[in-house]
Image (cartoon, rainbow, N blue to C red):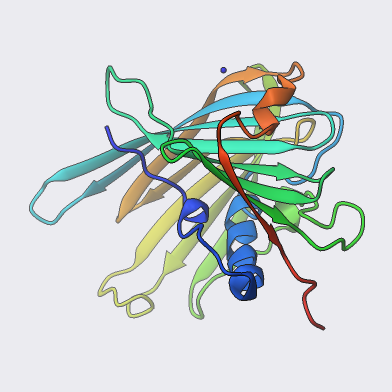
Length: 247
């Protein structure tokens, strides 16, 4: 182009021993890849800036508001970079870390800007696009506790950041006692995805415990600078060979 930065869980505990590499990678890859972000998508480069606001109200009436900025890049070969920072009004975000998914090299790289370190996980070869294949929104399973009523609705398409988006609304009704609640708790969430770019463009959640709004505010569909997906000069690099998972 993710005040104190809130670093995604993927960027914690980067000092790994070889024997623990597979277990650590399993958790890291899940967080880095299996989110609303696009999986491996070819031929659809983009650069995205996303703003998120989370609001919670405490029993004494205090309102807690947390804002974050997420920046994402994807090139035509499916490389994907993401970094997140908390932000405050009038201040620029300070990114402390970034994750880079490279399906060409079959690696997952974690950058720490404050320490100028990079950890490169070399993943076992499990076939084409096995790192994280893209999954359509409607194919993502909806999980719910027993007793929770779930209703799914398709929404009318709309344009977000100049891109055609398809949406889905999910309403969950939790009867008393399901989550320790003494009254019925109803939450409504919406997600909007570009079927062309295959990337999340907006989402929201309206729940008595928390309100969340996420929106792409900038979107550039040109090819990102290749250096975005490379380790900066001067960084100390640690390389971890992740063993093949035993069957």
